Length: 524
Image (tube, rainbow, N blue to C red; front, top):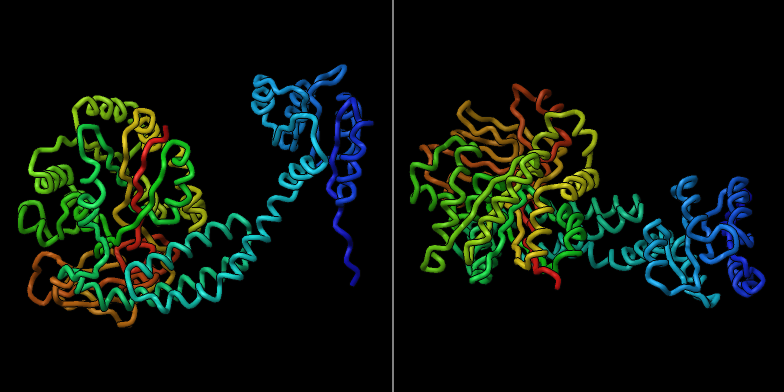
């Protein structure tokens, strides 16, 4: 079979001093580029009508139509044409005008052939070079990475492996390396399996405050918010149900405004809002909350009733930690339609010295839950990559981003975290339960609970293993492992059809338990 040579990338160079550019043209041609040189803008526009070019090098100062006028026409006719402006002018307004018209790069004469080649290579070959580089990097890293998941035995080791897998997922996805992405998914499956076995063994010890336990939900305020309290206001922002990969996709938007110091904590079990988020705001486990506030806690497992007192829990925790009353402004935001009112209330609260601006944004959680009920959302956010893209699209236009940008402009520090993540569930597992069992698909509490396949769930009859309030006699606690979700034998097909390929939370997996904390310091 005869292989055809790759067609040379086509470059159009527009410059009235084209005779002086022969060394540049020969240099580019020697490296496989097809280069047409023309002396004026009108002829260049005519050539572009006849055949497309991969890149236009455009002189700014020419007789007749000057470069910026030609650029304006190119942008109108060919909005995606890649253009490099070449100019003798070092004046700021010329460069600003060119950048405003979306040039891909800007060169100031005199330029060497090597400078031009560097720009051309970056624009025309950059993506393929980066793709080849990331593939080589992953190939060299794979032998060690494949063994790390099985060798991990500590919270730090599991977090390190999971974080690296998330990074490879993002890098390889951006490079379009689908084959290598399948390898990362396989490594993630192996990690989930080892992680689940390890958590089942270690979690009851963590609940007894073993010295080697990781930082948990109950430690977040003490370890991150407390050291930043002082005379200046500080923000404490919780984006409900945010995975590490979603945070990594969003964080570049914040990097323009903040210096970002990233860390992580482990969500307590069940990895669900009534437990994990209450633990963050109170600094206490569910059994301690129920003991201190018996009127607040019931067996409903309903987020609306169990998470109705987060502001009071935070105020009480801060007083316990500092020995004084710390002013707190708390808001829970479900929709961006009230953005102006939220920002006005926050700005008003900032007038109080040393106040904590505590904000909970529920959109990511609402999107994750709504996806299972909406065929449109299911199609738009069909996998992890699509969910990340949808999260970033929301965040760019969200009240959360507006509030954070305003915090940066005013010089206020921010602690940003989440209560738990979510996992794309693919495998149903049958569970036998009475009617009084809780309804969550990744964890269940009830009498006489059992999973048909014991290897798919963590099962305990001792509420102290999870630091949950005392239940009725005969209560069992079942938490799904890996990407399993619970189905009843009487509704097997209905639940399989409805929830397979759904993002759920409440169970034991790195995606749900190992979640980010970011300390954001405004850039000067």
